Amino acid sequence: MLNKNVTIKELETWLRETDKQKLEQLWLAADAVRKEYVGDTVHLRGLIEISNYCVRQCTYCGLAADNKKTTRYRMNADEIFACAEEAARYGYGTVVMQAGEDYGIKTDWLADIVKRIKTELPLAVTLSMGERPFEDLQRWRDAGADRYLLRFETSDTELYKMIHPPLPKQAIDRFEILRQLKLLGYETGSGVMIGIPGQTYATLAKDIDFFRQFDMDMVGVGPYIANPLTPLGRGEIKPDISPEKQVPNTELMTYKVVALTRLVCPQANIPSTTALATMNKESGRELGLARGANVVMPNVTPVQYRTLYEIYPGKACLNETAKQCQECLAARIASIGRTIGTGYGSRNHGPRANLD
Image (cartoon, rainbow, N blue to C red):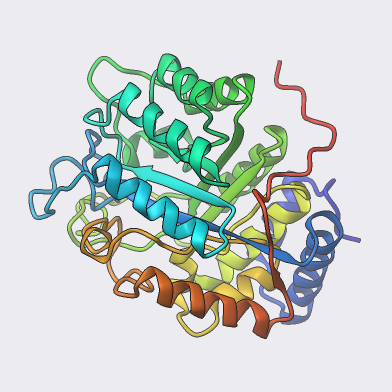
């Protein structure tokens, strides 16, 4: 029987599996574990994309600093708080403030916004601000931030350097930052892209095992979607990898990773992502929820900003208002017999992994 003790070799075998009957066993096992550990509720996290400035040159991302075709924006404090108020009105238990790695977002400025939200609204606050100094992370935690998302993208160090070049004179270990976040008391989330050029099945299996080793509170995985405004999307970077080793960036592979992640991290909060919904606008989110996921992140960013936060093109629900998104998701969740969760939707902590 499939369970959390699945080995790395077995993870790789499942990633390569194509037999529909066997995959149905995987879907059923993941859904059963999801039901046992996190229940039938689907928690909604209101996403606020507060800035699309970024100092990095990631080769897959439309927000990269050298992309001169992107109109840059940075929301002000009142705009951000208004989005949080809207999320609270819709009954969301969490807001997720996300940005490029933008050092124009000053530490104390963001701390004041976090403190205001925590003081005036019944919301958990998740931050996704990239690689920031320990002092910034501490300040935001002290202000009341509950969670932090930092995707490590891949455990392959050479592939990571290719897709995520370091800043000059700055060698940062994202795994060390994840350890720091846990020590600060954040609920800590991470994740990877699926099918990024150069990613092997063996590497992706190790990535999933890293989720288990770090006992992640949240895990976000989604397919790589090429952006023609980036070096990878233009084909300027071509990793030396044989086709039989390259992981495809498909909808099916994403479901496999969601399901296997649920098995190895049974208590984690796992979203059915917007990227998945972008690949399958009809039922992508629902199938993700049926195969291990328990979170959806409706976008509450004002439309005029949302269209500028273009990591990849063709994002689902790009022109929907926050209200339209809320109504659509409520109907979709009800259609699969699940209910919308209330409150923060924090992880139900069990025994934690030893990170020493």
